[in-house]
Length: 344
Image (cartoon, rainbow, N blue to C red; front, side, top):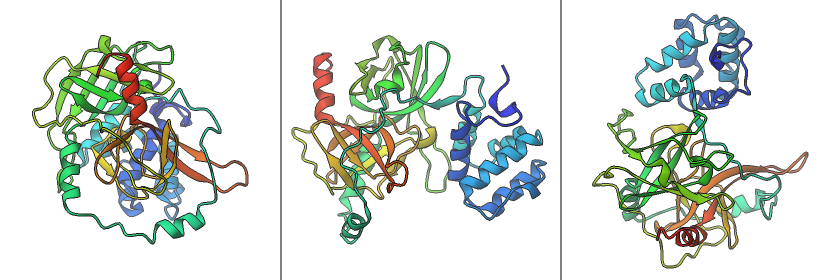
């Protein structure tokens, strides 16, 4: 079967196509740099409008390179560049079975609560202080060691990426839709990448791959949580994220997410991080996430675990004001599920 990068015209509905564009636009976000790279790859660049936002520039460039049958040379220029993590991620997308974001099979339209025009709220929230004690950084760095990138192979050979975090000696927590396919079948292979991070110079650090036991995967699809056990020891420095005795989170609080967006190196979502809605089941927030962030831990300002991130949604239809929210399953509901499965 012809790989999606080799099809002309380029097929944007192919698995991995939009992830490729979004990844490249998030990393290579200066048009002059991208234009020079495209020229070196043999792309005739006069067909691309370089004065538009980079997401649109990459959309045009990918289509242009595809039409000229120069898309693979362009991507080879990316993979041979100095950013090893980006090169590795592009190579995953070029695989026979591209490693893509695990599909969210629980989404239903219109299930985000209490939409409202955000302008007045923004004026209130963004006047508030964001100062933190410096100990906040130290605790966040400690907890980040628990977070890992997942690479999952499904029963049909499809490959997905997501995020997980350590909750016990040999147990990782993530989303059901990351580990299980649409039929509820367990994966055939799972890898957990610990320490997959960039250093202060942007270089990718060496990471440790821990193999997990696919048959140990267990979870519940409707609340969208799952756990899996490792077959080897996890890194000695990987913390176990503790479950809090009680959770207190309210609208307008701030939450933080440690994640592997785009299947890349570990990142911290700490901007626009306002809680928009809280009920007994979910917490909804503005904190930044991307494809591949499913399964990430959501923390409050004291680094207490409050939710398991599971999805994002655009709210508002037609001519209504649009709002983008992310959503996490409250950690109390996760603990109830783990207890039902006798995992805690």
